[in-house]
Image 1 (cartoon, protein in one colour):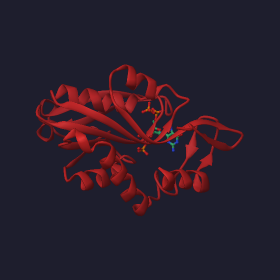
Image 2 (cartoon, rainbow, N blue to C red):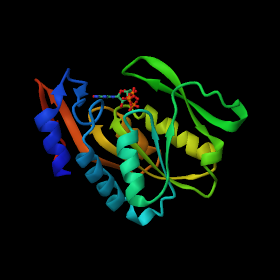
Image 3 (cartoon, rainbow, N blue to C red):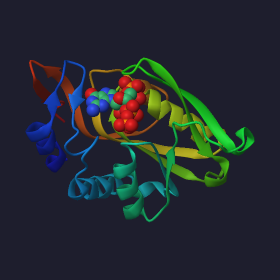
Image 4 (spheres, rainbow, N blue to C red):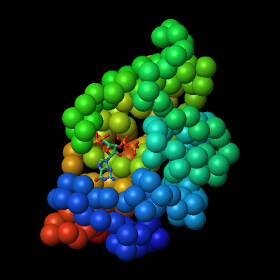
Length: 191
Ligand code: G4P
């Protein structure tokens, strides 16, 4: 996706060979024009999947998630990271380990928003080790629903998430794929 690629080149800050900072358009300040295009592109890629729900995780997944849900004309659910006040029996809970933060979070989704007949598109801002995507997929599977695919805004292809998700049988569509973050520059996977 050319607009996104240009944004990454113009505004992305390579913090280390592992981390790309994109807080001017995705992780802190958000660019609504770009997010609208992101929503259209995911919709185009998953148009054949009869999606009934989009699922993401707070907080940075919400912007690309809502724009995709708007285009698909379906609801967006975001998994919460905070402990819910709802009774445990009313929520799906999964543990997600963050390698970046070296901590485990419980993510939760209310049972009332996901049914076995749902065809769920998972959207997230970054794909690194795939922990968040796997946690979201396990929630969909707890509900007896179907994961139709995983849409990622920025994939760090040098980390194992994509490969692990493909091996687990999921369809992964990433709008930009980063091969390496070396010497302060972003190298893209050429497709
Ligand atoms: P994983 O889910 O693929 O295994 O990733 P990981 O545990 O490494 O990521 C934890 C958090 O760090 C996630 O956000 C993820 O989006 C973010 N992240 C991972 N790599 C990068 C990167 O190179 N740059 C930036 N900017 N973020 C990265 P989170 O903790 O859920 O934060 P938020 O959604 O509340 O912003």
